[in-house]
Amino acid sequence: MITSSQALSGLTPFRNGRFRRLLARARRDTAATSAVELGLALPFLMGLAMTGTEVVSLAITHVKLNQLAITVADNASRAKQAQVNGAPRFREADANEVFQAAKLQAEDLDIPNRGRVILSSLQRNTDGGQEIRWQRCWGKTTWPSRYGTQGTGASGTAFQGMGYTTTKMTADASAAIMFVEVAYDYKPFFLGSILSPKVIRKEAALYVRDDRDLTQIYNPAPAAPVASC
Image (cartoon, rainbow, N blue to C red; front, side, top):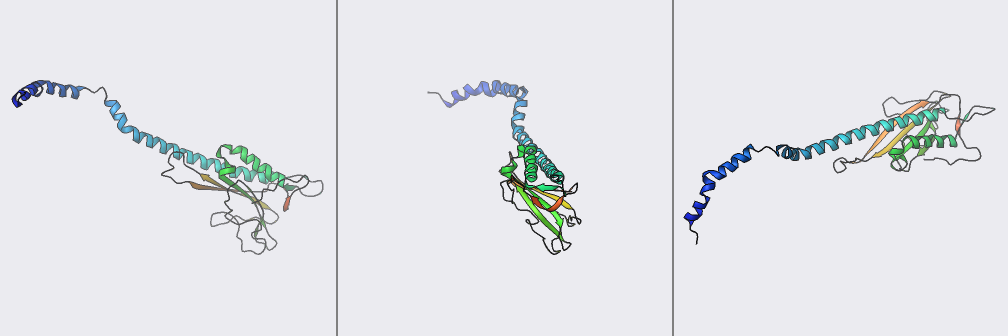
């Protein structure tokens, strides 16, 4: 049977020198210091990297949607079919081609399933007020225009025009503005549990570049599908 004095005597070498040398050696050993520091900092570095990636992705999406709105307005302002007798016409086929070009431009954004592009023709009505003469849409989502549907402002002067600023955009007499609204359902890549999905909206507008029959959108045979809203 081992007595307490014998047990203490067995620990004496550790108490007297060996344990102290072991501690001194551990204090001098710095071989794994970098690995420990990296392990402690890694969660913060990963969080910083994911946050930076999220911010860059959001900024790029804003730029792409802004360029998409401008391109749609530009293409719609130029599209027309020349007529032998009379002014060139804008057709349903032209509207479809404008949206097809938008699909190719923003293919990586999946606009058909996550967004909506609204093309409106802002014109002056017979009473001198502003009117959405016609409106066409592309995309499966159901976001409506901020300013009304086709026919808004058909009479009177109550409709002030289009644009999210206090000063609305208005069309001159015998002219038309191709006004484009883009709404997109943005979903975060990494921070979905922290940042909720948001709708990004962009707008662009351009005057019709050349003479055009502004009374309506034509749909001559063979009839093209109508991209109604």
